[in-house]
Amino acid sequence: MMRRLLGIVVGLLMLGTVTATAHADNALTVKLTTPTAQRQESANKGYADLLTEKGATNKLTFTLQNSSDAPINVDVTPGTAGTSDNGAVVYGTQNWGENHFVNLPARMEQLITPEAKTVTVPAKGSATTSATTSVSVKTPDSGISGVLAGGVSFVQQQQTNVTDSKTMFQSEVGYTVAVLNRTTNAILVPNLSIGDVNATLVNNQATVGIQMLNNTQTFLNGLM
Image (cartoon, rainbow, N blue to C red; front, side):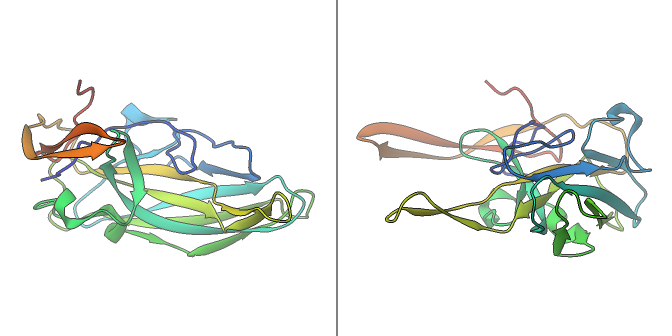
């Protein structure tokens, strides 16, 4: 079962999730080629929503473009989706604690394999102004009861910015493209329960933290 709520959100990365061609203040843009296994209900959505067979391996292809005058290196990493403490879905995280998931048959970060862990994207105006890379998505041999959710993150390698002689900071900008996989179109009914409840002080104010458990491998949206 999933210990956190899952749902689809659209956002600009630093870091976030895209459901279309990504544009930001940095030089990198990322676009997913619509997969052959894309569900008809999610046609032209910009993220992968796969309907696959047990044990199948599907390929996702991405085009990366660079609008700057110099080549950039982009790290490509898979992740497993979960819900952050502020209620936003994060699709590209590899660092969820084990307490976030119980009896989950597989994590998407273990089923998504990048063709290359780092991709060099040429500068604009060069002979080739874009780079293409792919990942493979493995479907468990036992199939999927509900939905497995994760993503592929494309993060430009860190740059150091100097604002004056005394100030220096590092920026990291990129995108995560959501990847959903299922072996049936059947929609499961979410089963919500409450886990641990903790009281803490945040900025000298009492705060209650409530762990919400989605006990079904599906999305639970719009919780108020």
